Length: 232
Image 1 (cartoon, rainbow, N blue to C red):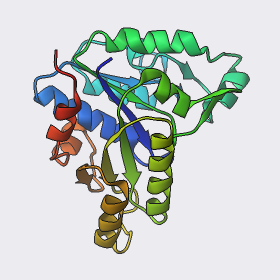
Image 2: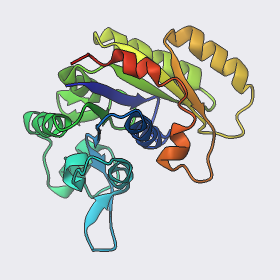
Image 3: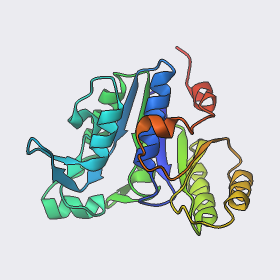
Image 4: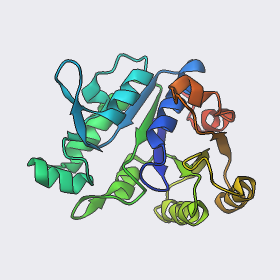
């Protein structure tokens, strides 16, 4: 697989918006991109009556590869909670090998896959498998989305430590404005850059309309990711 695993410092810090923005940016660079929401919990009915997850819809709308909703979101549950709990409530299962096969099958259609995790870096999926294990199984370099809000330095450094302890490469990070009223942003960014010690792809402000193209405009260091991709 060629691509990146997108994780975050917490839930609700904009991983999907950033993944959609990266999809648009890499497509603008001439690559065929497969954004994949590895697991998703929480569905609503669309205009056609189909039950689908909002994050999956957002990533599906960002891609131009012609992927189906099921290819973008290979495993979705209706109940909005942690995936292992949603699976139990919905009467579903999380099958490790089946999920990995679906992710790899979708990734094989593209030049680069962007596989988004769930919540933070270590979210339980089964009794003995979590999203950190998923990242290890895929063996992709990691992009960390840091939600800029109080506590983000601690969350970011702990996540980076967890990523590296699994033998994974932290390739880059993105500063995403989770709290537009956060004080001392510049000082926090300096501390984050020093502590994470990998390139920052960009600082994304709080956008009134966070469309993929608008997010992509703030990801100004895309060459960092391009340099990470193995050459054919």
